[in-house]
Image (cartoon, rainbow, N blue to C red; front, side):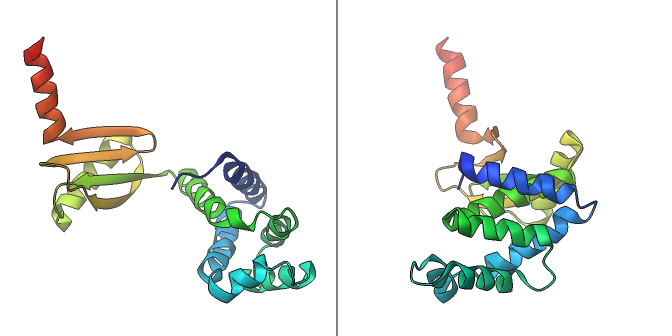
Length: 178
């Protein structure tokens, strides 16, 4: 799910602060946010969203979700989200922040769509070709597209590499009609 502009601004600002902490800064803050993300559901989420719970208690709850070793910047960021009533954006912000951390490490994300399940060898081949072509590491996710006849489609950010049979047939039809 694409994150909104506000989530991207918060994530970018936090990432900038994390870079100022040094080489390990982004990873330390990501670890704290991951801890919150894992625990932020059910009763914890209800309590943090409840107007009947004082802001100070909410802040303490948020800090405990982040863990005792969370960097000061992560705690300040969580306080800011509570203060600005932006808790609903937390998961989007965390997703964008994680993308920024991966990009900083030279890792790109891509989604691979196929007509049927791919085996391990096929997945490794796709990963190898992408890494060779883009000269970057890739983190791939796979999905089956029941509308495909065969072949693959790969979404890398806003780019789509469409190697599906359906698209090839449509291109052939268009070429024959012209």
